[in-house]
Image (cartoon, rainbow, N blue to C red; front, side, top):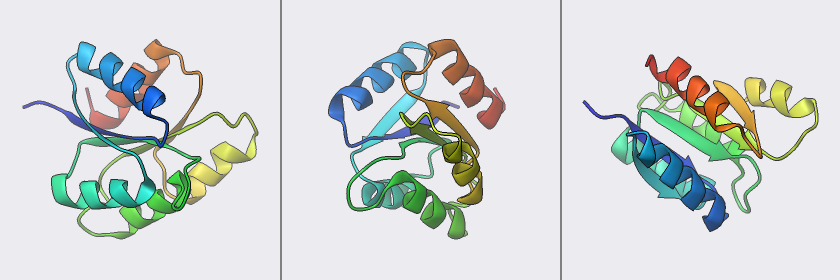
Length: 122
């Protein structure tokens, strides 16, 4: 069985880089460019993990995470928030909204894969 990861980022370059990296190591990837679309795709496709940027217009990653974690059909999906914010509040806030982890940009590819493996039991 293959693992499906949903990448959510309003910046297409960040999405493309992450997608290429994850597909290179064998993951299936789908992408979304907004928190709203992430909530829809999570409901429809039940990915194994969501890798979501925090800073997006309209619905940010924190709000999307709250919605995903509050729905019975999607609450079980691990959410790894990605942020360029280097402030200490980001980690605490990511835990408050129910995220399963936080990765800061620019991320270390090895660290990112370790977090993914930890969350999907790989």
